[in-house]
Image (cartoon, rainbow, N blue to C red; front, top):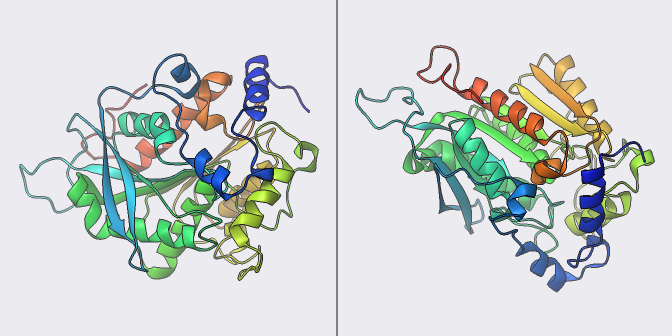
Length: 345
């Protein structure tokens, strides 16, 4: 293993030896119990995860999927009204915030929206946006591509009616996600391009899983902290199921294998240098750039998979968060908009 900061090494050692167990040997009941876990939003936990800004209101809403199932979203709205006016809004109408649709990580199997409160609330406050975190359906109860469909359906609902109802501007939408959520965010952009909308202003992909065939897995980090090759294989077994209906290289679930990436929205791709998924994220960023998509890519040295969830236990957490919110703000508050130059760290 390459050099790892001491604080990260100690924390990830405790994490990997934690009482919640490993996805490698979890049964369904254990998976469901693990999904329910959320770190308390108090010290010392927030020294690890970051705190929730006080000026962000957290709420819940519901949307209906294409197969008629109601799914919940968790909303994060800044308390100040500085979001600017949506296109075509009447003079004097209440301000509406641009929208960031967020998809959590967890290998399409684990995770929940509440455990991302610190990150999503920070994005809301510092990117001056309504953040909507989607509680998409997960495996093994719901196999691929159900999670993709839920992600696409949630984004379409926000563009059609949900954003306006929640205080957002449906003409300014970005997508963001980490790991499996980065996969979903990328695929939402593909679907929007193919379907002629909704327009996506920006995609922020945090150590995304974009090649489910594992053809670019970084073997030297196969036993890295947090995410190992064996864990990836376990997640994929749950996601595909015993009788897979899709090939791992099907572009409907593996963004990297889409034939053309031309016309996709501007992107930020953040990768961790000590992550087995590093090279597929970098390769996807290279393909975006080659296709003419404005792309910023940063490979964080000394960082492991999952760093966005425990920024306080890394040396790069503050910088990675700053880069993320700056890029989202820049694309959601374009030059000439009321708040284009108001944000600062």
